[in-house]
Image 1: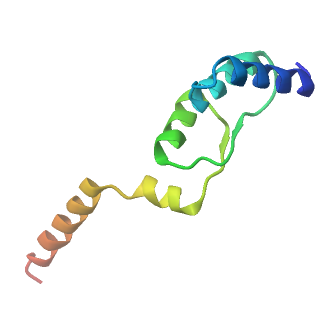
Image 2: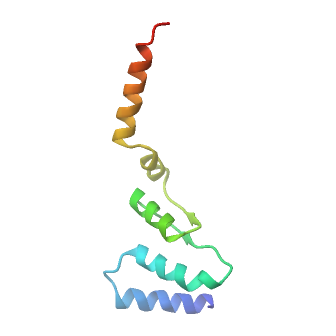
Image 3: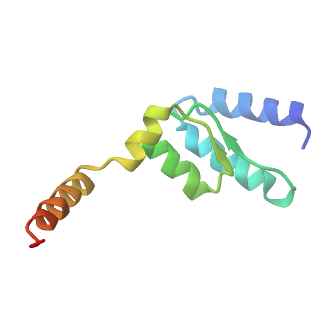
Length: 94
């Protein structure tokens, strides 16, 4: 598929399904390019859910702001677990 054909496909999809989630479009592109030697890049991702969705779909590369990466590694339960670990560690006789 030529670049111009992909562009037309994307524009057609956008017009036809304007309410479609962007990740659905990525899934369509992944399916189209499954038989070609290429990489799928998901650009300008704005939240951790879309990063996870892109990974599930099989995107090769995701670009996102650093703040999104921070959100990926920060989770309230992880913070609670780390705090409890440190508190328990302080209780160990030295």
